[in-house]
Length: 313
Image (tube, rainbow, N blue to C red; front, side):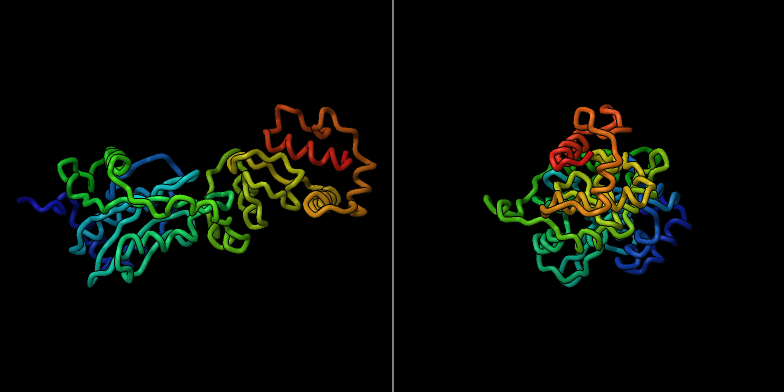
Protein backbone atom coordinates (compact mmCIF):
# COMPACT_ATOMS: atom_id res chain seq x y z
CA UNK A 1 0.00 0.00 0.00
CA UNK A 2 1.29 3.47 -0.92
CA UNK A 3 2.54 5.63 1.92
CA UNK A 4 0.19 8.66 2.23
CA UNK A 5 3.16 10.86 3.18
CA UNK A 6 4.74 10.21 -0.22
CA UNK A 7 2.41 12.87 -1.66
CA UNK A 8 4.61 15.49 0.02
CA UNK A 9 7.80 16.60 -1.68
CA UNK A 10 11.08 15.67 -0.03
CA UNK A 11 11.55 19.29 1.14
CA UNK A 12 8.08 19.40 2.67
CA UNK A 13 8.60 16.09 4.42
CA UNK A 14 11.94 17.22 5.82
CA UNK A 15 10.27 20.33 7.20
CA UNK A 16 7.50 18.33 8.87
CA UNK A 17 9.94 15.88 10.42
CA UNK A 18 12.21 18.69 11.61
CA UNK A 19 9.63 19.58 14.27
CA UNK A 20 10.84 16.52 16.23
CA UNK A 21 7.89 16.45 18.65
CA UNK A 22 4.39 17.94 19.13
CA UNK A 23 5.77 21.00 20.88
CA UNK A 24 7.93 21.72 17.83
CA UNK A 25 4.75 21.76 15.75
CA UNK A 26 3.21 24.21 18.21
CA UNK A 27 6.23 26.51 17.98
CA UNK A 28 5.86 26.58 14.20
CA UNK A 29 2.16 27.49 14.47
CA UNK A 30 2.91 30.19 17.04
CA UNK A 31 5.59 31.72 14.82
CA UNK A 32 3.27 32.00 11.82
CA UNK A 33 0.62 34.70 11.51
CA UNK A 34 -3.07 34.14 12.15
CA UNK A 35 -5.08 33.77 8.95
CA UNK A 36 -8.12 36.04 9.04
CA UNK A 37 -10.10 34.46 6.24
CA UNK A 38 -12.90 31.96 5.71
CA UNK A 39 -10.76 29.32 4.04
CA UNK A 40 -9.90 25.65 4.50
CA UNK A 41 -6.32 25.21 3.33
CA UNK A 42 -4.59 21.87 3.23
CA UNK A 43 -1.37 21.32 5.23
CA UNK A 44 0.69 21.83 2.06
CA UNK A 45 -0.90 25.24 1.50
CA UNK A 46 -0.35 26.21 5.15
CA UNK A 47 3.30 25.20 4.91
CA UNK A 48 3.69 27.33 1.79
CA UNK A 49 1.78 30.40 2.96
CA UNK A 50 3.13 30.34 6.55
CA UNK A 51 -0.21 31.31 8.09
CA UNK A 52 -3.34 29.54 9.27
CA UNK A 53 -6.39 29.84 11.46
CA UNK A 54 -7.80 27.42 14.01
CA UNK A 55 -9.13 24.80 11.58
CA UNK A 56 -6.19 24.96 9.20
CA UNK A 57 -3.71 24.87 12.07
CA UNK A 58 -5.31 21.75 13.54
CA UNK A 59 -5.32 19.95 10.19
CA UNK A 60 -1.71 20.95 9.58
CA UNK A 61 -0.73 19.74 13.07
CA UNK A 62 -2.45 16.40 12.39
CA UNK A 63 -0.40 15.96 9.20
CA UNK A 64 2.79 16.90 11.06
CA UNK A 65 1.96 14.42 13.85
CA UNK A 66 1.56 11.77 11.17
CA UNK A 67 5.00 12.60 9.80
CA UNK A 68 6.36 12.05 13.33
CA UNK A 69 4.75 8.61 13.55
CA UNK A 70 1.62 9.56 15.52
CA UNK A 71 -1.95 9.15 14.29
CA UNK A 72 -3.48 12.29 12.68
CA UNK A 73 -6.25 12.92 15.22
CA UNK A 74 -8.35 16.05 15.64
CA UNK A 75 -11.29 16.93 17.90
CA UNK A 76 -13.87 19.69 17.75
CA UNK A 77 -15.12 21.99 20.50
CA UNK A 78 -18.65 23.34 20.23
CA UNK A 79 -19.48 26.68 21.84
CA UNK A 80 -22.62 28.65 22.61
CA UNK A 81 -22.74 32.22 21.26
CA UNK A 82 -19.19 31.78 20.07
CA UNK A 83 -17.10 30.12 17.37
CA UNK A 84 -16.04 26.47 17.55
CA UNK A 85 -12.43 25.43 18.02
CA UNK A 86 -10.55 22.55 16.38
CA UNK A 87 -7.31 21.09 17.70
CA UNK A 88 -5.02 18.17 16.94
CA UNK A 89 -4.60 15.69 19.79
CA UNK A 90 -1.92 13.15 20.56
CA UNK A 91 -1.40 10.49 23.20
CA UNK A 92 1.88 9.71 24.94
CA UNK A 93 2.13 7.00 27.62
CA UNK A 94 -1.63 6.91 28.01
CA UNK A 95 -2.08 10.68 28.48
CA UNK A 96 -3.58 13.20 26.06
CA UNK A 97 -2.10 16.47 24.84
CA UNK A 98 -3.07 18.95 22.13
CA UNK A 99 -1.61 21.20 19.44
CA UNK A 100 -3.71 24.15 18.27
CA UNK A 101 -3.65 27.45 16.46
CA UNK A 102 -5.71 30.17 18.10
CA UNK A 103 -6.25 33.91 18.07
CA UNK A 104 -6.39 33.72 21.89
CA UNK A 105 -3.47 33.15 24.20
CA UNK A 106 -4.66 30.14 26.19
CA UNK A 107 -6.47 28.08 23.54
CA UNK A 108 -3.30 26.55 22.16
CA UNK A 109 -0.89 23.83 23.31
CA UNK A 110 -1.53 21.34 26.10
CA UNK A 111 1.09 19.05 27.56
CA UNK A 112 0.29 15.29 27.47
CA UNK A 113 -0.79 15.02 31.11
CA UNK A 114 -4.57 14.53 30.79
CA UNK A 115 -6.03 11.10 31.46
CA UNK A 116 -9.04 11.56 29.19
CA UNK A 117 -10.25 13.80 26.39
CA UNK A 118 -12.81 15.26 28.76
CA UNK A 119 -10.05 16.33 31.13
CA UNK A 120 -8.27 17.87 28.18
CA UNK A 121 -11.40 19.72 27.05
CA UNK A 122 -12.09 21.04 30.56
CA UNK A 123 -8.60 22.57 30.65
CA UNK A 124 -9.87 25.01 28.00
CA UNK A 125 -13.14 25.85 29.72
CA UNK A 126 -11.95 28.67 31.97
CA UNK A 127 -10.29 30.65 29.16
CA UNK A 128 -12.84 29.88 26.44
CA UNK A 129 -15.02 33.00 26.31
CA UNK A 130 -16.49 35.33 23.72
CA UNK A 131 -15.99 39.07 23.34
CA UNK A 132 -18.59 39.70 26.03
CA UNK A 133 -16.57 37.65 28.50
CA UNK A 134 -19.16 34.84 28.62
CA UNK A 135 -17.71 31.35 29.07
CA UNK A 136 -19.07 29.51 26.06
CA UNK A 137 -17.49 26.04 25.76
CA UNK A 138 -20.19 23.36 25.91
CA UNK A 139 -19.33 20.16 23.97
CA UNK A 140 -16.39 18.21 22.61
CA UNK A 141 -16.32 15.57 19.89
CA UNK A 142 -14.79 12.15 19.78
CA UNK A 143 -11.36 12.09 18.07
CA UNK A 144 -11.39 11.84 14.28
CA UNK A 145 -8.56 10.08 12.47
CA UNK A 146 -7.98 12.03 9.27
CA UNK A 147 -6.65 8.99 7.45
CA UNK A 148 -10.29 8.37 6.56
CA UNK A 149 -9.88 11.25 4.07
CA UNK A 150 -6.69 9.95 2.43
CA UNK A 151 -8.61 9.21 -0.77
CA UNK A 152 -9.35 12.96 -0.99
CA UNK A 153 -5.65 13.90 -0.60
CA UNK A 154 -6.45 16.10 2.41
CA UNK A 155 -2.76 16.71 3.18
CA UNK A 156 -1.63 17.97 -0.24
CA UNK A 157 -4.66 19.07 -2.26
CA UNK A 158 -4.86 22.63 -3.57
CA UNK A 159 -8.62 22.56 -3.16
CA UNK A 160 -10.37 23.58 0.08
CA UNK A 161 -10.80 20.73 2.57
CA UNK A 162 -14.29 21.75 3.71
CA UNK A 163 -15.25 18.07 3.88
CA UNK A 164 -13.35 17.88 7.18
CA UNK A 165 -15.29 20.55 9.11
CA UNK A 166 -18.54 19.28 7.58
CA UNK A 167 -17.77 15.85 8.98
CA UNK A 168 -16.93 17.37 12.37
CA UNK A 169 -20.37 18.98 12.48
CA UNK A 170 -22.08 15.65 11.87
CA UNK A 171 -20.33 13.44 14.42
CA UNK A 172 -21.40 12.95 18.03
CA UNK A 173 -20.33 15.49 20.63
CA UNK A 174 -20.24 14.95 24.39
CA UNK A 175 -21.59 17.51 26.83
CA UNK A 176 -19.20 19.13 29.27
CA UNK A 177 -21.81 20.69 31.58
CA UNK A 178 -24.89 19.30 33.22
CA UNK A 179 -28.26 20.96 32.98
CA UNK A 180 -28.48 24.12 35.04
CA UNK A 181 -24.73 24.68 35.40
CA UNK A 182 -24.73 27.56 32.94
CA UNK A 183 -26.91 29.62 35.29
CA UNK A 184 -24.01 29.95 37.73
CA UNK A 185 -21.27 30.87 35.25
CA UNK A 186 -19.56 34.25 35.62
CA UNK A 187 -17.98 36.37 32.96
CA UNK A 188 -14.23 36.59 32.57
CA UNK A 189 -12.76 39.48 34.53
CA UNK A 190 -10.88 42.30 32.89
CA UNK A 191 -7.40 40.98 33.71
CA UNK A 192 -8.14 37.58 32.18
CA UNK A 193 -9.76 39.20 29.16
CA UNK A 194 -6.70 41.31 28.45
CA UNK A 195 -4.34 38.38 28.96
CA UNK A 196 -6.25 36.12 26.58
CA UNK A 197 -6.56 38.76 23.86
CA UNK A 198 -2.90 39.77 24.00
CA UNK A 199 -1.69 39.99 20.41
CA UNK A 200 -5.13 39.21 19.02
CA UNK A 201 -5.39 39.75 15.26
CA UNK A 202 -8.35 41.63 13.77
CA UNK A 203 -9.65 41.94 10.27
CA UNK A 204 -8.34 45.11 8.68
CA UNK A 205 -11.17 47.23 7.38
CA UNK A 206 -11.02 50.88 6.34
CA UNK A 207 -7.64 51.26 8.00
CA UNK A 208 -9.09 50.94 11.50
CA UNK A 209 -6.97 48.05 12.75
CA UNK A 210 -4.87 50.29 15.00
CA UNK A 211 -7.99 51.62 16.75
CA UNK A 212 -9.29 48.11 17.40
CA UNK A 213 -5.95 47.13 18.91
CA UNK A 214 -5.92 50.28 21.01
CA UNK A 215 -9.45 49.57 22.21
CA UNK A 216 -8.45 46.07 23.26
CA UNK A 217 -5.45 47.38 25.20
CA UNK A 218 -7.63 49.87 27.04
CA UNK A 219 -10.25 47.31 27.98
CA UNK A 220 -13.02 47.84 25.40
CA UNK A 221 -15.23 44.79 24.94
CA UNK A 222 -17.61 44.81 21.97
CA UNK A 223 -21.25 44.10 22.78
CA UNK A 224 -20.52 44.45 26.47
CA UNK A 225 -23.06 46.04 28.79
CA UNK A 226 -20.23 47.87 30.52
CA UNK A 227 -19.50 51.34 29.19
CA UNK A 228 -15.74 51.80 29.37
CA UNK A 229 -14.12 55.23 29.72
CA UNK A 230 -12.50 56.97 26.74
CA UNK A 231 -14.60 55.04 24.25
CA UNK A 232 -18.04 55.67 25.67
CA UNK A 233 -18.77 58.57 23.29
CA UNK A 234 -17.04 57.07 20.28
CA UNK A 235 -19.17 55.93 17.34
CA UNK A 236 -19.04 52.20 18.05
CA UNK A 237 -21.15 49.42 16.65
CA UNK A 238 -21.57 45.88 17.97
CA UNK A 239 -18.74 44.49 15.85
CA UNK A 240 -15.02 45.12 16.23
CA UNK A 241 -14.72 45.36 12.44
CA UNK A 242 -16.28 48.83 12.41
CA UNK A 243 -14.60 50.52 15.34
CA UNK A 244 -14.18 54.25 14.71
CA UNK A 245 -11.24 56.22 16.15
CA UNK A 246 -11.77 58.12 19.42
CA UNK A 247 -12.24 61.90 19.36
CA UNK A 248 -8.99 63.81 19.13
CA UNK A 249 -9.95 66.44 21.66
CA UNK A 250 -8.35 65.70 25.05
CA UNK A 251 -11.08 67.68 26.77
CA UNK A 252 -13.81 65.67 25.06
CA UNK A 253 -12.13 62.38 25.93
CA UNK A 254 -11.76 63.42 29.57
CA UNK A 255 -15.42 64.43 29.57
CA UNK A 256 -16.36 61.04 28.14
CA UNK A 257 -14.50 59.30 30.97
CA UNK A 258 -16.29 61.37 33.62
CA UNK A 259 -19.65 60.68 32.00
CA UNK A 260 -18.86 56.96 32.03
CA UNK A 261 -18.05 57.04 35.75
CA UNK A 262 -21.24 58.95 36.53
CA UNK A 263 -23.27 56.58 34.39
CA UNK A 264 -21.78 53.48 35.97
CA UNK A 265 -21.49 54.45 39.61
CA UNK A 266 -23.89 57.37 39.96
CA UNK A 267 -23.09 60.78 41.38
CA UNK A 268 -22.34 64.19 39.92
CA UNK A 269 -20.49 64.87 36.72
CA UNK A 270 -16.90 65.97 36.84
CA UNK A 271 -15.85 69.54 36.03
CA UNK A 272 -14.71 68.76 32.49
CA UNK A 273 -17.95 66.95 31.66
CA UNK A 274 -19.99 69.82 33.09
CA UNK A 275 -18.00 72.32 31.02
CA UNK A 276 -18.39 70.22 27.87
CA UNK A 277 -22.11 69.93 28.58
CA UNK A 278 -22.53 73.70 28.56
CA UNK A 279 -20.50 74.06 25.34
CA UNK A 280 -22.31 71.35 23.35
CA UNK A 281 -25.44 71.74 21.31
CA UNK A 282 -28.68 70.08 22.31
CA UNK A 283 -29.55 66.49 21.43
CA UNK A 284 -31.58 65.90 18.31
CA UNK A 285 -33.73 62.85 18.86
CA UNK A 286 -31.35 61.46 21.49
CA UNK A 287 -28.49 61.49 18.98
CA UNK A 288 -25.46 63.73 19.57
CA UNK A 289 -24.82 66.64 17.26
CA UNK A 290 -22.40 65.78 14.47
CA UNK A 291 -23.52 62.13 14.19
CA UNK A 292 -26.40 61.23 11.96
CA UNK A 293 -28.86 58.61 13.19
CA UNK A 294 -27.97 56.26 10.34
CA UNK A 295 -24.31 56.41 11.46
CA UNK A 296 -25.17 54.91 14.84
CA UNK A 297 -25.93 51.28 15.53
CA UNK A 298 -28.43 50.10 18.13
CA UNK A 299 -25.83 50.04 20.97
CA UNK A 300 -24.86 53.62 20.06
CA UNK A 301 -28.45 54.79 20.22
CA UNK A 302 -28.97 53.13 23.60
CA UNK A 303 -25.80 54.80 24.87
CA UNK A 304 -26.92 58.17 23.51
CA UNK A 305 -30.28 57.88 25.24
CA UNK A 306 -28.68 56.88 28.54
CA UNK A 307 -26.37 59.89 28.38
CA UNK A 308 -29.31 62.12 27.48
CA UNK A 309 -31.13 60.87 30.56
CA UNK A 310 -28.20 62.16 32.64
CA UNK A 311 -28.63 65.58 31.10
CA UNK A 312 -25.53 65.36 28.92
CA UNK A 313 -25.76 67.30 25.66
